[in-house]
Length: 243
Image 1 (cartoon, rainbow, N blue to C red):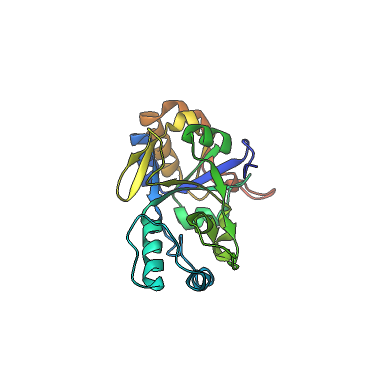
Image 2: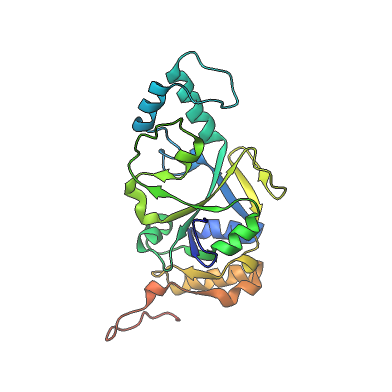
């Protein structure tokens, strides 16, 4: 069973500079696991580590055997983190106040929105997987890279993350494989359902986003709008900027 229906909305929050890179290059950046913000990405956490050391080392990892189980486990951890590349999205039917703050700050940034169906069709052989936010429990078997790739600490459950996971050996002719990240062809006007502008942005930022889109992805303009969080309740004056 797939983790998501094709109609599931996916959001990605980004600074204006990252949005400009996407527009100009028409490429999606897929970061290497050890360059992402969370140092616990793909970590062999204490529960898994204790079980791994008790049961025996993880094999194979594409390199020679280390002298001790601890050294070998450390080598596995390094290998997994430097050979795994992740495209992160938020699976939600609505925007997230927390993610606006985390990735865009107080006033500037955009949220792009696609669907699982469009992204999976675009990626070809790489599905979107649902991240699990839970404390690890003993597995009763040998740990695999898949176990740690989709597990994050409960502190991050507000992210509702869906991720497309690529590896050094992923066979896809569209991937351009670099040392710190992969790039994948991505036409925003074709793939995106909408672009939401930061709810606290001012008119100058709003216009700057539109000018950038006019220059690099003109058909996308009709899909641009203010964040839905900008709406004001009854009896409050609307913000003095265009709707």
